[in-house]
Each structure stands twice: as C-alpha cells, then as structure tokens.
Image (cartoon, rainbow, N blue to C red; front, side, top):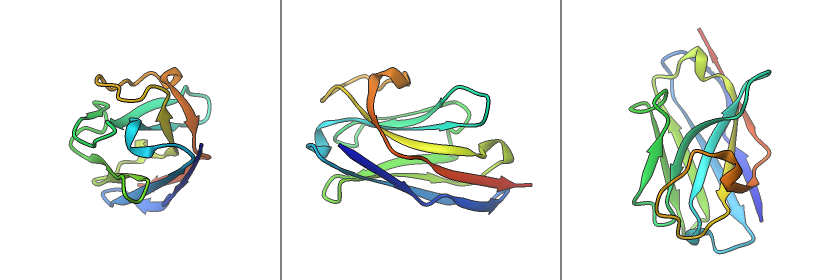
Length: 126
C-alpha cells in the first residue's frame, strides 16, 4: 500500500488549505482513513478519520468545526479541508490507512493504522 500526501504549504492565519492523499495497493473503499499531524518534539496527534463509505467521520476537538475530512473512493483519494487556520495548526500532516477493514467505530489511536503517507508540511503564519 502506498499513500502520497500533497497540498501543504504556507498560509496566513484565517486562511484555508486542502490536503490530498492518494492511495494505491488495496481496496481503498474498504478501509477507514485518518489524518494525523506532528510538530517537533511532540507525539503524533489525531486530526480526523473517515469510514470506508465516507458516512462516518470523527474529529479532534481542536479542529472540530474548522476541518472537514472527505474521500472519493472512485479516485482512491482522501482529503482534509481546513479553514480558519491558526498558527497552532502548523505541523507535518500525515494520512494513514486503518489496518482493519469495515471498522465501525473510528479510532484516533495511531497504532490502529498500518500504512502512512510521507507527510506534508503546513505552516500557518500569524
């Protein structure tokens, strides 16, 4: 399984950004997908997750109402749309594929994800 994240960059506070993660190598629509982020010296932090069908979504409290996760199973791609970005959103963002197909309860535990993208840097300037 390969995951390729893209879309990071520099954005001003209050601005918006959309990250993409293209997947290949297994039946994409079967597996939940997640986004995590990490800053130097800190543990990887859960951002959002989405079920294989796209019907169920979960968000960290820190991004709820500002970030939206979505997926296009025909394109094998998952997205993370962020708006009203804050300097504290600055991080390397990683997409990840859940190790369990058809998981009904989405998980924020990074150990539940077995494949990871390479990360894309988002910098929010104040």
